[in-house]
Length: 272
Image 1 (cartoon, rainbow, N blue to C red):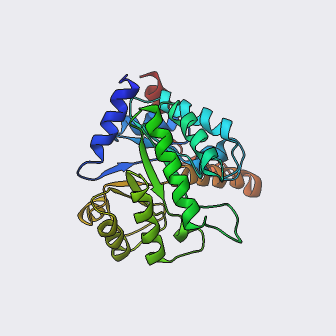
Image 2 (cartoon, rainbow, N blue to C red; image 1 turned 90 degrees about the horizontal axis):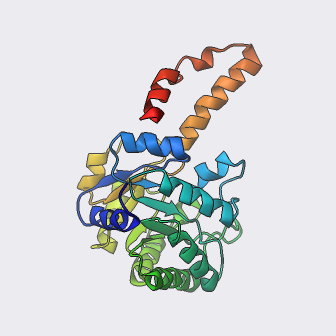
């Protein structure tokens, strides 16, 4: 298995040119399967991790999330980017403390978002959001780890779909030290192109979490550097599980198992 340093160096190189998909496993098995398919890097999903332990997204305690991130990092040869939510603190000092703990898990990258978790005021004021990003940057630099910092502007998925305001935030996070910029919720080519141009030459991550006519090559042509899927693979797995279980309860039917993965294939995968 590559060393942590080698994983981090590989991850930074991936952000220098081209476009890559960084899918989001939610446990050891899904991480190893995705590695086997040939992906070049993985990212944790806060939602998938939360559902696996019976929490709502955003409700996982910091120590549980750190343990989950470490588990994913140690289960794969690939570099891992941590979906680290808002840094598990409101104040910059708390963010810095959390970021240092996250770096210790062996991640190659981590993201900090500007969502407050409060529906009445879904985003941090820009000055505080920037201070939090600067604190994350400083914390990473103090470790000397080379971990890549992703700045996330959450407005489009938190009820504040202001493209100009979101771009201003991304530019501010870039100036504060974010290495990669990410605005989940963009679905149109024109929006994505505007963001890519606005923060260039910094790389941009785009979330493809719902069915969309855009394909990987189209996003690459728009200048997107990396593509993640968030909790969508976990949601797809939950969808199959829920449908099969409900068929048993509602109809006494076991037809929900017809598309299940064969036991032999799974055993072969994990014996390898």
